[in-house]
Length: 516
Image (tube, rainbow, N blue to C red; front, side, top):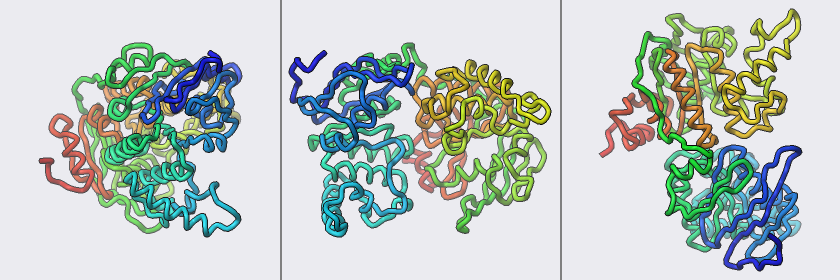
């Protein structure tokens, strides 16, 4: 399609025939899409479907190999992000682009200063920031330092940055990946308020609930192509999942009742104090048996991370931990991750990019991390790299890692496939206890189904699984028992069949009473 065909001025954005390749990989193939002014338009697809590449072209991070961009009916060249900002486009990335030791006000002004003197820019920004925050219910202290803010407030700062630059079109990439349910609901109210004021929102997400709840229209991408655009009111989660993956997807966890065996893990009076002297775990007691999944629910920052770190050997604490009846050193020199692995504990960390992988290293190198002392990978004094590569290729096939290329760097894989690499490395070691944090954070619907199946299969093999997730739907669906953490303590334990999200939400807020 060419520019000869008149563009519709009623459209905020029109992309025609956009194509982009990275070497032999065709990330976008002849994509055309229309986004109406004053609407919330969702774009969904599996990890690696090309969503973020397409939006990066629109925001000027990449140049398309072919195709045209129309903004407000006018053909527009976007060679860089400044051109996108000048065209009224703002983008909130999945991983925020904020300077952590700057204040909110300084971050908002950064890159948009007027003249040589900063003080007038800050004074103007303070006034405008207050007006924007009032208009869109985004109350943030302009003098707060970014590193002192929670992720929900940091995200509001990113939105305010874009609005300060007079963005009429706002692109959000996986905006709820690190938000609690309550923070996500607040974000949706903000987006609906922006839409009602005439702003256009493009929401990139893999969460079907969010698509159904907040969007007006949704476009589906699969393997670099646009497969469908539908009105949200005229579709369903099941139809969208099938369009995303190309097959029917089970949107619930299919598992038989647990058959718990003997006790694998016992934790008594576990306490952890951080480097600043703040007590993060305040006397944790829990028990976990073979053949069951114990879910740990809670708002991020209430001690779940520290619990995983101590159990996995990444941090020290006091108290007692027994594994298969034998006490584990949690405070001395023998308290480390290698010792834990030798005791049959595997660990899928919460942050795969910072703790689970070295992003610049190749897949086969990442697949061996932590297990490189294994005799099968060694020939005398040297590592048997060929054996590691063969082992990686086999694991990639079993876990459906795409592309199944052991020589690619970890950063070249989508988030879901990065998670599969970590899962394959840990699950394939046949552990007695699997510690798994945020197993499907930033992962698409097809990969979520696969990961859930692997966790349940491990349970059914008689393994014990400690699951930490901020996704209450995931906790309810996977867990055989649920323990709720608040402020470093276990507030209560429930069976999924005997509770609901309302009661769990109260426990997560530190209240022990049942929901009315």
